[in-house]
Length: 201
Image 1 (cartoon, rainbow, N blue to C red):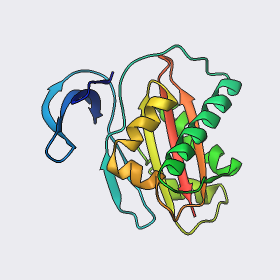
Image 2: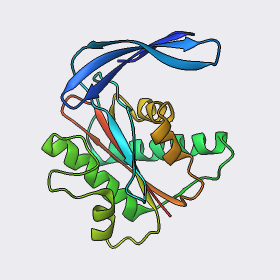
Image 3: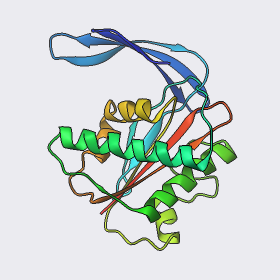
Image 4: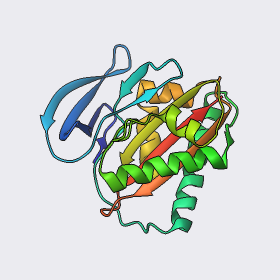
């Protein structure tokens, strides 16, 4: 669960199998958030975003909590549409054009989100060692650059907010080189949403 006041915020972050409550305070001198305490809790995971050079920008984009959501395909499609709208709104707010949505890239992203739910892992690489690049190539999708953001959160809106509050994930969303996106969504049995954003050029 994340809570925030004007100058302080508490977020829950999962690192590997452990959940931490991280308290942040706004430094009025430079308007930057600084970590003031980290306490062990229980429940989410940190993630990273890989660019086309194979470099990894790490950052957390997870909060914990549950919500009641149906896992019907109609609800998944609605959530994915909402996720795209939120992501493109963040791009427009930063002077960038919308990314074009690819149904084939969306299918790859959705498959990875569902795979994380089914096999209970949270990573850009699946248990078979397949990376975002591997998954896109297997689907016959060609590209010259690729990036991926993943989140486990209470809603697609909360996931997008977390992405934008993390430098690595924000950099993927606001990368002017990317032209196309696919955002996949899956829900676990507790109602948590897994969001996968796959960006390509």
